[in-house]
Amino acid sequence: MCLLNAVLEWDESRIVCEALSHTLPDNPLRAEGRLGAASGVEYAAQAMAVHGGLLAPEGGEPTQGYLTSVRGLNLHTTRLDDVTGPLRVTAERLSGDARLILYQFQIHHGDRCLLDGRASVVLDAQTL
Figure 1: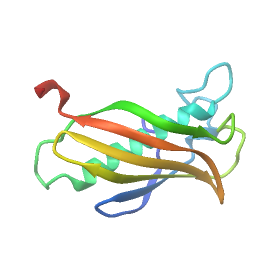
Figure 2: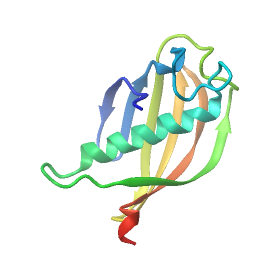
Figure 3: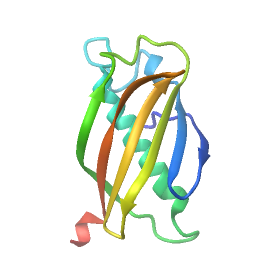
Figure 4: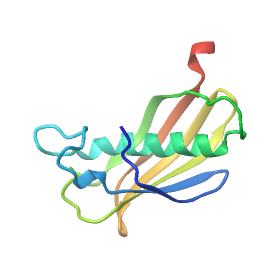
């Protein structure tokens, strides 16, 4: 399931992606015909995964990451499917090492913040 359409910009600490899938009637996260705002966490998680892939050494083995917690989640709307036009998904790496990364994320529609929060990602959990 790929919810993001494009990477707009990125550097070592931040990624900004664009998504249009929130308006699709066959979005796999829809329940009872609607896409709740909490589904935005998956959009943010995918942006974090893309960021990790872009930062990986060329030719290296991909690192699996697992979303382990979401903190300080603020939902400023109830739904994502009732806005037209692209969503801007931003994830900023606040801290991290070879095993654990903390990101701050936001999803915007134009100038309006729809949700924001923090998430931790554990890397290569199967080797712990």
